[in-house]
Image (cartoon, rainbow, N blue to C red; front, side, top):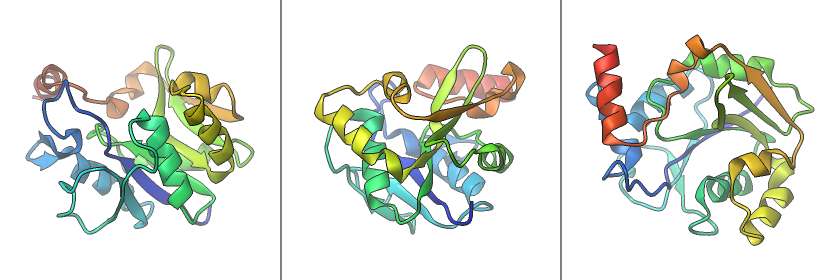
Length: 190
């Protein structure tokens, strides 16, 4: 894969976190900065999909959702519509433990025939840590138009690849959705 754009989806409504998720502090830094640190060895072409100005302190392009209130699928649609690369790394803003090594593994194992490549363990699929092709734009648009916004339903509609990882490797893929989950994470790491 010659060129790749990384998009971080920062448009989520953070009702359980009680604040903008990507800016929640973990080990003294906002989640978003941990994610950027993991992406930079792979590509410097990083963009945010966000409907807030709270990320303006970071020197990356920011784009608001084209179609508001359509969840992660709406964010992915906006990312792909604004991308100049065929393949795109799509990441949620709530994965502060993600590593460059895992992202490099995702890219290395990506089959060019797959329009989406994501990780999964026995118990969980991670659709918001993946490689997405611009070729799926019409399918996403149709799903959004029909208000079919569940990621798992969407995955079944396009050729995709699932990279299996062991449960023991799942920890860096953990997404943090609440203050309790953040507290648990801090306890587990201390």
